[in-house]
Image 1 (cartoon, one colour):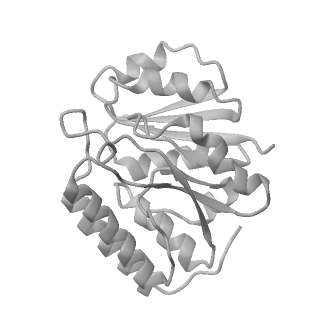
Image 2 (spheres, helix red, strand yellow):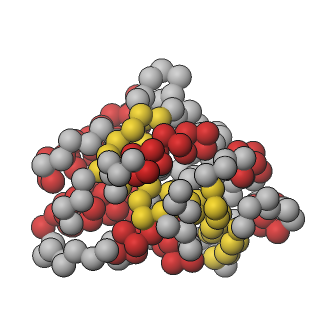
Length: 233
């Protein structure tokens, strides 16, 4: 079985962080946690410094908030596993579903796996959040002649060598379209598996806004028209 590094970018998630870490550490598939505290100003640093981890863990802190993309890039650089999966700290995604994501890779059916959310009344933050997600996914498919159902999903799993070959540059939430656009532009196919999802609202700490949707459209378009790089990894 491939060694799995779970990449966890964290910013002000004191309400859910311990429960999320408990859930991740219960998974026998996990070989390593790489947690990047992106300049949190709540109790997140104290939770991380005081935790007795059950599996090998790297805890890295950015002294100031730099964005999810910057935190994820730091985690990718530090990880040591064979494959790496992104896990947000907000409990919207369930670590119990790691086996669903790993299965296509272990069977040799896929190199890159995404967890696809099926939005329903109990799992949607709002109507406009779902419509925005569908719009950026549609634009991805138009630009890259693909047929993805959920481009913005957090659950993205691939070999660490592929993560590093993407040469990611984004600091904010535009890291999500950058990852997908660069994968598709390099000719890699993305294998989707259905996952569950429990969206949180603004009061609970939801950080995405409509501006991130606009940035996603711009990022996808920019990468589509940029000169192609030689494929690595």
